[in-house]
Image 1 (cartoon, rainbow, N blue to C red):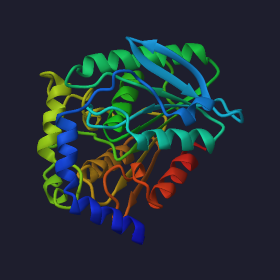
Image 2: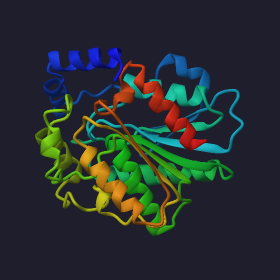
Image 3: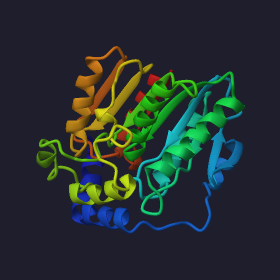
Length: 289
């Protein structure tokens, strides 16, 4: 781990980032209106509403590819898109010839998984109709990663729209029940996430549904017949044990897998202004091709 990352993570420990993150997750703030950074306006390709939520597609002037990334942000299903997510969107648009559509899906506690899945289903369907020649990929970090995989499993089972050709999961939250006993060993290492806090967020989003239902926790879903899955995870995060279980399940399926762990890295480190996030970004770009 480089010195910059060590210093950044030292600061996280110093300010008790886990306590701050729990407060943010449990008492999420809401913007009066949806907006994205001004610097992204030059990439704006189209914008429309689905269930009164925004779907925004970005593309650079050099966008010549038929590849189309659909991005679902993380935040424990409660927190709105953060600056780090917009950095990731900008980099993916600038450094590839692909389109990227950001889905502003409904969040808990005001909404639950039914609202989120209904909005995403309609948004994805409309994107497929608007861009019939595009090849779709899914990308999500943290909760957005778990959401991507659960949605892809649903697409496979229902056949209502084309399956994504590739699914990239960054530090994905795969099991909302947090029942893996190995998670307890990771709790002291993860400077951001708290099992207790995540369970509160999970129950808001689930609205009474069993937390082990695959629509919430895709780790319990069938892994066969997905086109391709990549999982990227830090070695110092609560979700590492479940990511390793995902790896085992995918290796036992007929779905191609790319898997990588990053030594010493914290949860969702692509959102932090450290050199290591560029390594992960390049790995994602390489996976999407």
